[in-house]
Length: 180
Picture 1: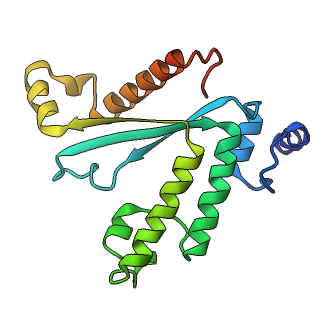
Picture 2 (picture 1 turned 30 degrees about the vertical axis):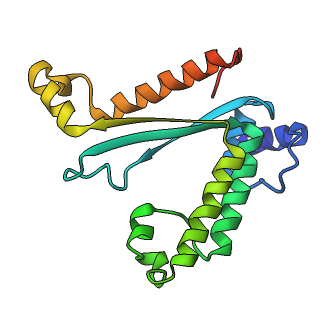
């Protein structure tokens, strides 16, 4: 039944972004019945250096773009990855030239071009970005007085701050519709 809904929605889906019949993102947009210009927030947790105990910071960040722009983003991002012969970008692997980035260590030109191209995809498709950073030492100091860990963990704290920033942005730009 889900495929029938998806197929019916695709006929009415006015995005000329290529074939997205196998795209999970296109399926999500169709399932939410989003119009091409409707804002859609997508968040990712930046965990490469922030998710380890020995690091000082924890960061959560995300981007806002229209449903149509996310489809263009997905296509351009994947084409760039394919052009460079990789399947994904994981900064820990990239920074240390390991796994699929093995052999890139001494090719600074390729590394710079790769990041520049991916950054250009983000810049060209995203309307707004949000982020929240938590200094772990400060959290632990406050936690020692107020036992934050009983109700408020670092990742959700940063996530909630991102959601608040999205809401501020929505109100500042007079966007009446919900952001998904």
